[in-house]
Image (cartoon, rainbow, N blue to C red; front, side, top):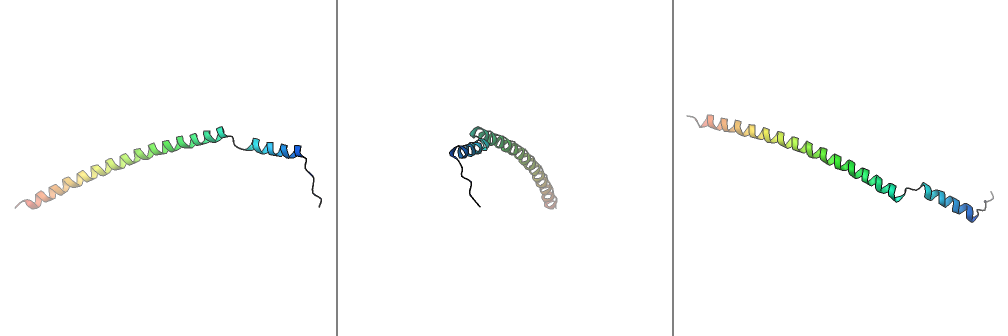
Length: 78
């Protein structure tokens, strides 16, 4: 099988097409900004979920503490 000889102009054209199909720096930066924005939104949602869970745990602990106080008071009676 004979190898086809490539001219410098053909090689330059192939390289130019390769570069034109490669992501430009501005496109990459835009993509990173989009990802960063989405992570910020995820962080906000996780913070809200964490606050809800902590508030619920606080209410439950306070209720348990009151119930324990009631039980201690009942046993303290003679």
